[in-house]
Image (cartoon, rainbow, N blue to C red; front, side, top):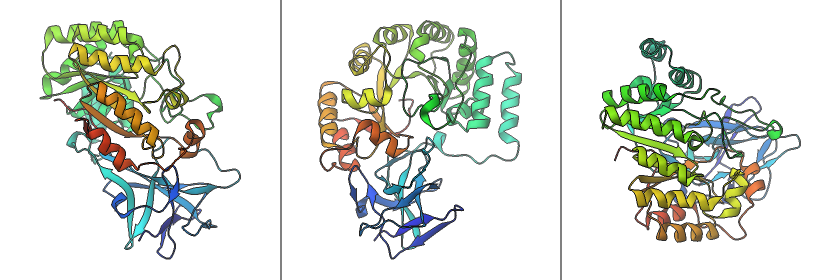
Length: 404
C-alpha cells in the first residue's frame, strides 16, 4: 500500500505509512500497484510549495508540503501528485511533476520505463572535466557562434544534446532559430511577462549561419559512428522559420559527408518548408504535439498562423517523401489518456504511418495545464492503456531519437 511521502517547510522529506496519498490522473484516486515502481536512479524528489497533500479519506494533510518527483530520461510519468493549493501558492516552475509515495519505507513513483540509451544517461564529471572538453573544442573553432551557444547550454543548463557536441556521442544539438510561431504554455526558453514564472533558459539571440552549423555537424558525424545532428533545440524557437539556412547547411553537410543522421525537431507548422529540407537531404523529423485534438492543441501551443491540420500534413509529408518521422508527444495524465484523446490518436495513427512516438513528460504546473486544457469529463483510461493503444498500431514507443 502506498504511504504518504511529504516535505516540511525546509524541504526535508518524510514518510508516513499510516496515510495514503491520492494521485491525480484527471480524476482523484489511489494509485494502482502496477503504476508504481521504486524511484529509479536519477529521480529528484521535489517539494511543491504552497500545496498540501490530499489523502484517501478526503482530508488535507495540514502543515505538510506536497511532494513530487522529477524522473530521469527514459521514463514516462503515469500520474501527477494530488494536492490542494493554499492561498498565495506560487505557480510551479517548468518541471515534470510525477506522483511520489512511500512503499515499504522506500520512495516509489508512478512511472514506466519506456526507453534506454547510454547517450542520455546522466554522466558524473570530474571537477573541470566538462569545462576542459568545451574549451578544447571551442579552441578549434573559436569564431563559431553556434558552438558558443551549445557550450553555454552544456555548462549552464546541463543539456544532454549540447554536451554531446563536446563528448562526441549520440545526438548533437544545432540550435538555429531565435524566433517562433507558437506561444507554448510550457516553453522553456521564452515565457510571457504575465506567466508568473521565469524561463529556465534564455533563447538564442543570433541567427546561426550556414557555415557555423555545417562545421559542427561535419565534425560530429565524422567522429561519431551512427551520429545524429539535430536542428531544433530547447534553447530556440521554431527551426522551420529558418528553413532556407537549414537547407543550405544540409546541402553543405551532405556534399562532404554521407555519414549519420540529419534530424529536425519541429512543431511541424510549415509543411512546404519541411518539404524543402527533405529535398536538401533531411533524414528524419521529430514533430511535437500535446494532443491529436485541435482544441487542446491550440490551448497549449497557442499557434500563430497555423493549426493542427498543418502539423498532421507535415507528418504525412515525411512519410510520403521517405523521411523517418517520430512524434514528440508531450504527455500529461488526464489529457493523454482521456477516452476522447485516445480515440483521436487511434484515428490518426491508423491512417498515417509513424515510425515512433517519443513520450515527453510535459514540464508544466499541472494546475495551470488543466486550467488551460480542461479536465476529462469521464474517468481516463490510464497512461499504460493509452501507451498500449499507441503501440497497437505498430508504432515504437520510446523517448530518444535513434540513428535507425
